[in-house]
Image (tube, rainbow, N blue to C red; front, side, top):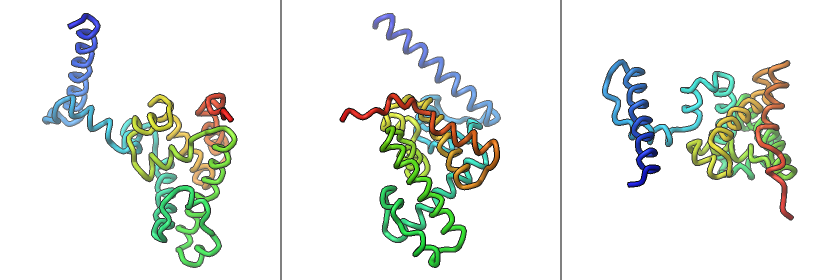
Length: 198
């Protein structure tokens, strides 16, 4: 066994012990499983739960996620299951069929999704795909990061920024906070990364 491999294994053992100790402390000394199990569960837990437990998002971001999920569920109940089709659903026709809060969620989501579709075409910013993966598919942050080709940290920041952008777009926040949250989402990704090769 090489020196480098021993160092990596030693670091992994320390990390596992640290996770076990933190979990025992958080659960008042109860048996919480091995550190490896805890780490594996953390890697596979839904992104919103991960961010909420880390206190990186709060009530407003969860309201944004709930409104997105409500819109998708309402449209999916009509047999339309993809983000691309959701953008094209006629709001005017649906308005009479849905309660006001559902119709409003669908309209907000459609307009927001159209904005990010245009951004994707111009800059290759994957915000729409990323939020769909986090909120609707509930894919772990590490998997989403791999899909979009960015680090886990940047992906996590992007999920937060995307939810906040939606919150500002849908009027869940206003004033200075809305302006700041709107601007953050458009600058999470370095635009030079998303140039087209054609």
